[in-house]
Amino acid sequence: MSTSTPYVPRRVSRNSESELIAQDLAIEFDDHDFSEDGSWDEYPLTQQSPVVRTVDPKNVCLVVDDASMTYRVRSSNEYRHSQGRFTRAVKRVTGAGWTEVPALSNLSFIVNRGESVGVIGTNGSGKSTLIKLLTGKVRPTSGEVYASSTPVMLGVNAALVKDISGKENIRLGCLAMGLSPEQADAKYDQIVEISGLSDALDMPLKTYSSGMASRLQFAIATSVDPDILLIDEALNTGDAQFRARTKKRLDEVRAQAGCVFLVSHSLGTIKQMCTRVIWIEQGELLADGDPQWVCQQYEEYTAHKSNDRLRSAKVVYERTRLQLNPIQVDFTDGSRPKKAGTNSMR
Ligand SMILES: Nc1ncnc2c1ncn2[C@@H]1O[C@H](COP(=O)(O)OP(=O)(O)OP(=O)(O)O)[C@@H](O)[C@H]1O
Image: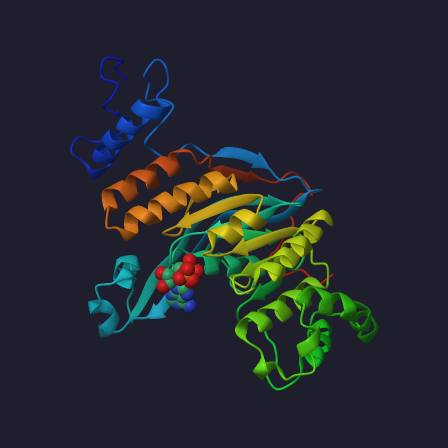
């Protein structure tokens, strides 16, 4: 690139939208981050080339290897003519009235033992789809997802039985997670303590508030000392005391050399609970790193978007994407965990 034109990035065509973004970025970098010789090369406007990252068989919990997910849904006139996000997401209508909805595209990352990974992203960005892939209940349409053991899923829809008491739900939940009756009895006191619900445990679950039910779910799901714990939005309903207990329990899971994967719209929860944050936007991995930094970019992005400052939002988006170091997963002999969904419960 010519050093005489430091503000015109070489990788974009003239007058394109990305050139406008590049100019905005140039202003930002000029103010804050521009390198001393004014070079653009440290801030390429195309995606960085992936760095090969070798899986460590002793430490690995989860591997997402170039995974993409596209849903196939039966299309209808209503869908075809709607002007919302759905329409924008729909890339192609196949023959016979089926529509493909791309949800995740070429995601790659590795989660090691001791990590607590938060996942953020705006509505419809693909967070829940990612969780489904990690549980192995849904297979990626391309790429692969690996897990060192069966993840324990804790979500808003995790099964609790409404007509029986909290006590009976504890016992049933433990048995459903593979504990023997003796193991379930041994875990009972710990579950009661974590839930903080001792006074209400004789009452049928249908009398619980949603926050109380979430607390019980959390206490039951974490009682098996899971190697991999997946949590989808379940922690947002508790009060401050429960959140402190939750954090303590998640720290214990991590200390036992497991990993925690937490999807939430609450950045406070994410910052409090996580050691690393992944930001997925429009099905793509946009950031992966320090919780404070990633959440700050996300807050800026969503603030611009909700105030209809779309160009500014795009600048934050591009700026964040440029800081991502995408990886290409590499397996050495024996380092490939089982495909998600094919492990048995430990
Ligand atoms: N079962 C499904 N069939 C078809 N499309 C789906 C299905 N589930 C999700 N999608 C689509 O996939 C995309 C990602 O959805 P997903 O639920 O994973 O996003 P999300 O980030 O969890 O959203 P939210 O924050 O609103 O819960 C969206 O465009 C959504 O419409």
